[in-house]
Amino acid sequence: MYERMIDKSVQPEINDIERYIGLNGCRYLQFLEDALMKRYNIQREIRFPFGNTYGWGYKYSHKTKHLCYLFFEKDAITITLQIGDREVPLLNQMLPTFSSKTQSLWEHRYLCGENGGWVHVRILSEDDLDDAIKLIEIRKKPRIIQNE
Image 1 (cartoon, one colour):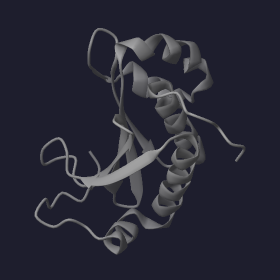
Image 2 (cartoon, one colour; image 1 turned 30 degrees about the horizontal axis):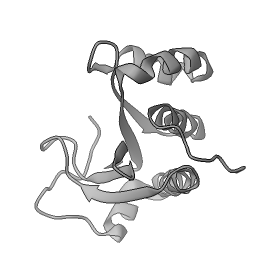
Image 3 (cartoon, helix red, strand yellow; image 1 turned 60 degrees about the horizontal axis):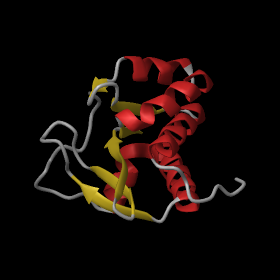
């Protein structure tokens, strides 16, 4: 696990988050949010899920459908999402289009259900971010994809 904002007693302000995740983290966060807004009716909440080790992050939802969590890390962000059993066939079809890093993350996922699981994609490049967005689209088909 990477260094995260794990003081549950202090909800971070936007300035704290931006300083913590750094310039690249801010750039990737903005790109992700722009992409999600084009594809979904997005709602964002600041949360401290999963006990004391994951820390503060944003929960993104489309209406009532949970899409992913984004965790704040020192000079980075990580996107965490679940691919359910019903979504696995589509993911398996698309898997060859993902980077070897993301393919490995899926292979070593935290299992949930018969074939599904949780994936944690640490965003350190545009390729990582593109793969994370494709995973979100597998989780929930986008309403419309606009040219970027």
